[in-house]
Image (cartoon, rainbow, N blue to C red):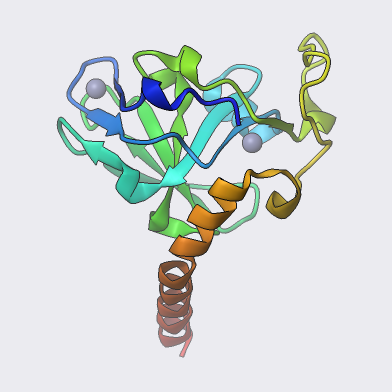
Length: 179
Ligand SMILES: [Zn+2]
Ligand SMILES: [Zn+2]
């Protein structure tokens, strides 16, 4: 892991400064995602997302609004946006729901602290984007057990019971809705 722990906490927020947040510790892992969905959602060539336990990101300004948005998995994502300027500050995906945030690194005041740990979905990377020699890169996705640091894997194990409880509640809700 290349994070400089002394850089934390890191503050960030939207353009109009109504939504402000503080990332209190280094993230679990940083994805540079080259999938077509991220390209469309950023209007650019890739997304840079810092994955972190939600309770390690605290609000220091107004609360973002959660917008239900389609996702590649078909299960949807929830994008947290400023209610005023509509800028997106983070996403929640179906896999971990509210327990993990995928913070948009570019919304940090000092985004330079969080370079990617891995480039994913490079199969659909725009051809002019050149991945630095030696950078970790995969055509699609990867197994976290093989690339995350021991510390990040340990942190994820700590979230696992709450994650299981959330998934069980979601299954129950879906069962209820279907029945
Ligand atoms: Zn705003
Ligand atoms: Zn993506």
